[in-house]
Amino acid sequence: MLRSLLSHYANVPPPAWTFEVDGFGKPRITEPSCLAPEFSLSHTHGLVCCAFSRQYAIGVDVESLDRPLDVSSVAQRYCSPFEQRDLEGLSDLDRRARFLSYWTLKESLAKAIGCGLSMDVSRFSFQIHAKRIQVAFDQIAEEPATWSFGLFQRVSHTIAVSVRAPAIADVQIRLRETTLASLQCRN
Image (cartoon, rainbow, N blue to C red; front, side, top):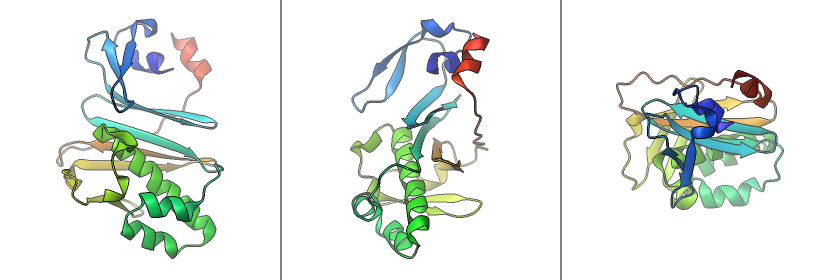
C-alpha cells in the first residue's frame, strides 16, 4: 500500500521503493533517491493510515475506539497536568474519547519530530478547540507556532496528523479514504 501511494507522488513503479528503519523505528526511503514526499504510517485494528507531505515533517497516528484502555492510569503517565485536569472534568465516555484525541495527537507529533514514543510526551500539552488545536511545550526545543494539526473522528477510530511548517505556511490537512483494492487497480 505504501509503495503504491508513494508512486502517486513520484514517477516510480511501486516495487522500486525500498526502505530502512532508523534508530527510533521510523521507516525511511533508501531507494530510489528521487524527491519523495515525507511520510508517516500508523495502523490499528481495522484501519491503516498513511500521511504524506511534499515538504514538511509529518506524523500520523490512529487508534481504535474499542481498544481496551484504563484511561486514568495511562493519562497519569502520558498526559500533561493540564490535560489530566481536563480529563477529570468529563464523563467516562467523554473522558475516553478526549484521551484518545490527546493520545493520537501526542503520538503523531512525536512521529513528526522523529523520536516516536522514545520522547516524554507528557512534556507537551494540547488544547483542543472546535476550530483549532494548540500545543505548548515544556522544556522541549520546539516552536508551537510551527505546528498544525488535524484531528478526525470516525465511527470506530480517531486519527491525528501533525505537520511542522513555517508559521506563515498555509497548511491544509485533508483526509482521503481508499481501499487496498482500488490502489491495486491503478498500478
